Length: 244
Image (cartoon, rainbow, N blue to C red; front, side, top):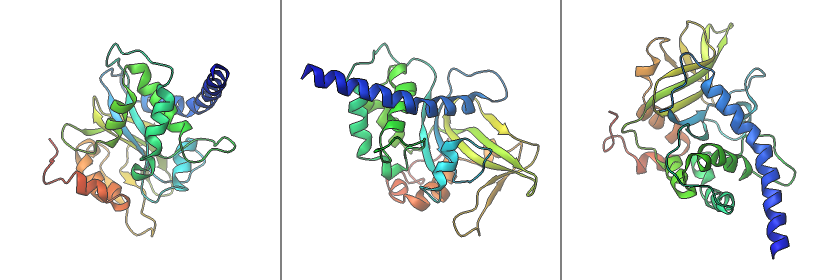
């Protein structure tokens, strides 16, 4: 039993090390922004399904898995408690997340390892970086991922790439939570555009200086998230959970 435990633990460490590259990539995209690092920044990060050679792999990968959105994870940058990691929590989180990742589009958005499906190496690497190391238990991190209430949550991240052809900033990532607002990516002084839906008929535009106030989590939830996962709006209706 001891040999089996050591072997399994070593294998899990190798897998998490591989997928941690994606977590580090998301971290660098979130923090390559205007202004100073904000230690109070917390955000539920979404990728939008767009194909482009110039964006990070996880954004391109989302297009193969969803027509509307993918969750990248919940980012935390300050220690939340004195809780220390324990040796079984990564396996515990993997077991938990496997039961719900498809219901919130929390797919494995990284270069797959042989024999692995859409769960749970990438997801566990996100917990390892933004949950375990910050004193958050597997169950508590799961609660953060599953909380789609709008109260106390605002747009605090927009990542985009400028399209010379369209003369707009095409949004590739959005974050909603707390802390200061930041723009990342190759952004020009032009309007922001949410990518069109699968039939290419509907796109949404937001002002360069006003997107922080125009794009609420309630609007994003109703028009993007619940278009593919309608149970979320039934569980978190806006008439009972208005934005602050």
